[in-house]
Amino acid sequence: MPDRLPPLTALRAFDAAARHMSFARAAKELNVTPAALSFQIKSLEDHLGQPLFRRLNRAVELTEAGRMLAPGAAQGFQTLTSAWVQTRRLQDNRTLTVTAGPAFTAKWLAPRFYDFARAHPDIDLRFSASLRVMDFERDEVDVAIRFGHAPDPGLFVEPLAVEWLTPVMTPELAARYPRPEDLRHAPILFDESLDFLDRSCDWAGWFRAAGVDFVPDHGVQFSQADHAIDAALAGAGVVLGRRALVVEDLHEGRLVAPYRLAITLEAQFRFLCPLGLQDRPHIKAFRDWIWHEIAKTAEVSERLSFIAASDVPPAA
Image (tube, rainbow, N blue to C red; front, side, top):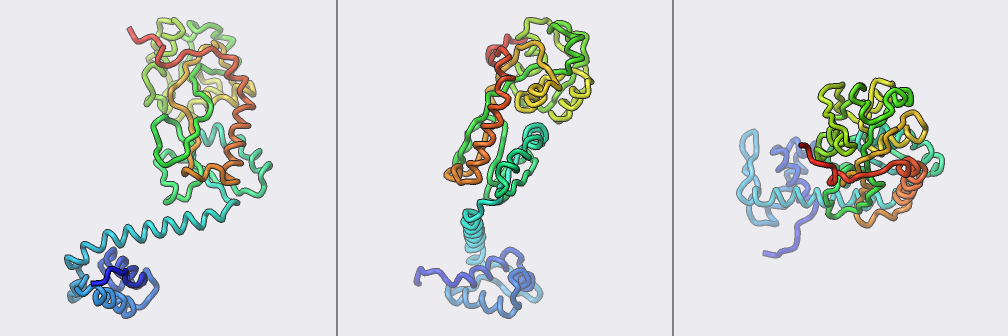
């Protein structure tokens, strides 16, 4: 039996029929007549020398040979489709699709994207605010901004600025609570999105680092970081703010970090894209812009003193 592959159209017809288990639905997907699809599958069976389907009265079912061929055919067409999509996207330097978490999108990207758009009018920027695991090929995403430190094989990974946590509040509240120990009497806001971090990166950990014997046990809790920060901006309380999400408000003076002490995190926001594509013109323009924007607010970090999360004293 020759090993050369049968015609691609015949394999495509088989793949569609095997997925739908219906010649009629497969023909509709491929926009051909059922007779034409049946002819393609028959030619494939002739090429193989054995049947791939059992034709029943109102249905079909795969033979042993069909069951063996179906997974490979499906995977082959998925791989071919993915490669074709990626190859076509190499020609597109005008559209840049970026995904980031909702909080990072709301607090870092959205307030700044107009500057990027103004500097690069030839690039159409699209945002997808999501925390789900992205497949760059399937989701047709160019760049992902994700928080973490786990390895990402096969991707270009560029850590952004060192992340830290420190209490932030409005200037009015800062005047009422000038010392860390004064926060015993302040309205505390809890950002539950920090719960996945090491326990030294919570309010209790920050008070231990500051040498204050206090563990806040009540206050308003928020599941989303940007909502907690919005509450702090409204003067509702004091929140443990993460650098990337509060740096613009600190830079502009809407919030203040009066105690200087900040806990640095092992995890960081990272710039991710498929390996080898990081220097494509529109992706590199976005990378360079991000670093330019980070530099504009670097002075906020320079005003703080830091302790690593691993050096925070353990709970008694």
